Image (tube, rainbow, N blue to C red; front, side):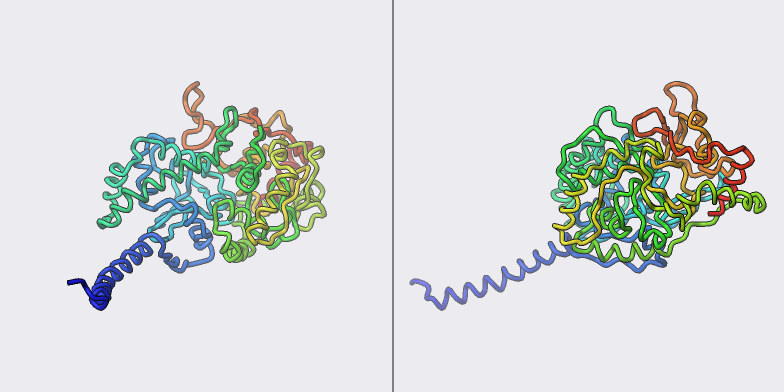
Length: 485
């Protein structure tokens, strides 16, 4: 006998009562394991927030935390030495789970991304055996960001980047339930590998043959901006540049920023930098506000060694005549762009940026619904304020002069080769330890740091000859005063 319509309806109801809860459970598990966003715990201070707080990059560019933990162990051969991520000069503050400039946030599963402190937090030691001090907002002169990016892609291409090896290593650090194990094996690990290798294609321009490495404390900022935010073809330009200090931002509100003065607004610098770290365009303005608030109030630390106040007093007069017009906070040229024909420093960084790149980048940001002062093209380098100058070595826009003492030397007396990336301070020359360790060919001249060859394109240490004709006594007095800024 055929089922009546009433029996079919009752049967369908029973099926729905069984199936719909199962569907709801599956949807909930999918949301909980992959999409649930957990707010960050409160930070103890604005400085802690700056060093470790999310800027909204985890969803687009985050690496699953447990894969990030496992990678230095399963791909140790792709690191420059022992110590995991520390071997790349990445600053790790005692008592903290994450390195400075690295965020951890749960979006379904814990993910790791970067924030502004990866480029703007200084580490230094005044004695060989002491723990380093870390200062948010200062230039990060130790981290090899290019090395970190290359490590990620080298590891993703390694045969060890597979579910069996990674899960075995992850299990040494945490217990994954069976759902997480299946998720990592069949979804998270394959998708992470694909994403990292896709990012390698976006950064292929930095691995062109014959292009100098950025090394510790530097990147190629305008090429990064150009190739990330515009569609202009890859060219032959190189533009290695130091990570600049970002403290005392309140004094820079009306200055041209970036080394070439391409950004006439601190707010625009923060927005573009956050977008470059894959921050969510929908929340980037919210993050920009607290970052700018911190940097507005952040002041550089005082010089950590003794200062001869009498000598510094004499140096103050020399500073007023030799430096103040371009570098004092109230100087008429401070924060303006000095034409390359006058300053005569290495022009490679200047030539990476074009008016066309600025136009397209401005259109790209506007298309995201973000309003900010537009990028421009200039023909020189910014005359920067000298606040916290003692902690901003090496000097010039490309970090090609290791110390203040050498900054006042004629071009032919400056070091042609030196190490950068050590955090031990050198109060004699007023900079960081820059001595080479090994002289034998084939040996690493700067173990644990980066060897700078100023003969390479973009590394030139010429120009900025102001003060180089002073007498030895005048130079000593000027340097003593510069320590006080």
